[in-house]
Amino acid sequence: MSKRKLLQLLALLLTFGLLAAACGDSDGDDTTATSAADTGGTDADDTTTTVELAQAEGGLLEAIIDRGTLNCGVSGSAVAFSETQPDGSVVGFDADYCRVVAAAILGDATAVNFVSLTAAERFTAVQTGAVDVLMRNTTWTQSRDSEIGMDFGPTTYYDGQQFMGRAADGFSTSSTINDIDGLTSCTSSGTTTEKNVADAADAAGITVELGGPFEDFDQVTQAFIDGTCDVITTDGSGLVGRAAVNQPNDWVIFPATPISKEPLGPTYGQNDSAFADVVNWAVYATIIADENGVNMGNAADMAANPPTAEIGRLLGGDGELQSGMGIPADAFLQVISQVGNYDEIYVRSLGPVGLVREGSANAGWLDGGLIYAPPSR
Ligand SMILES: N[C@@H](CCC(=O)N[C@@H](CS)C(=O)NCC(=O)O)C(=O)O
Image (cartoon, rainbow, N blue to C red; front, side, top):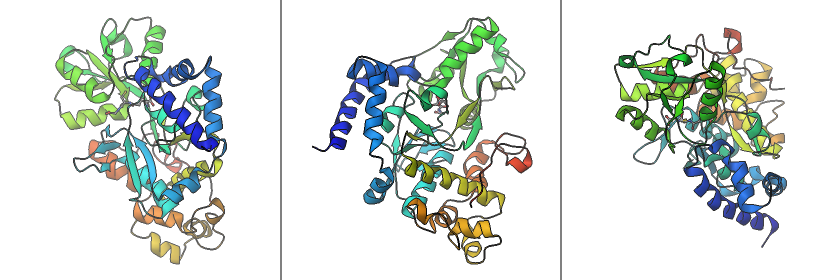
């Protein structure tokens, strides 16, 4: 058995112990590091070593090209971000970013194997190689970036944590964290969300009961509807999506300023720069295209007659940089013509639930937002 296979097997064995521990664990965000160490070694450093060894050979880009499909980890139940349809297909903003990466590497936006993962399962799925990348409303944090062994690509959606309560219970959009003193707040296990509530409650000097544990946000939303939870909490976009689907007449989202920063974007195993560069620049390509008015409808014409030298380079013309990254020269032309630019991807999925870029952090940098890409040069 090759060293890589042996390590994958070891990682897989760890997973079984890990998932069993993670599913019912209300502190799942730490579960990955802690449980892996508990199962496979004597301390947390063992986990890190295993992950690093498993990834030291790199080569994920070549493996995906050989396989012919991208294994992309998604939620599958995140409204407007990744929603599994009855026929098994997945729609949404995150699902489209899986397609962006597949189009860049394989020239085919449909060459994606979507893998639905709970919050608590997601990092193990990357560590064991079950998925190549997560597009799963995943927040970039210091511990995930370091001890949990992930690397993060460009933020595709700037989010922040909020609460949702009922107007009948006295909540309004101007409610604050102080208004949930003594109440039960529910969220899914294995998220930044559950920890932020504890921090925010401590800072405000209030007591908040954590309901659950809940494995996913379907269960959380149902518990809110059933009245088990006074309020529910997650990334603001998740609350907007749930309200859009359930069409309640008295669910309100607060506070106006979120209690945390939740930068969401692609997440993959650490120390594989060739793969990371491709994911990152595929995302940047959608942003540069948006800034320059290159879209699904005109990308082929723009490639044939580039309006600027940068667009020529980006779409595969003179001076293109994609071949040197191990992907076809026209990789980003495929991304834009098959999936679209950032704005097209955003509006297609997030527009219908009422999430608008204008005036938000997700506007382009020239419009006062944070969506920004380095130059293609
Ligand atoms: N961004 C946070 C939360 C991610 C997450 O899985 N959130 C869940 C619930 S707490 C969610 O919003 N799911 C969307 C949905 O199922 O509607 C993280 O990375 O930990």
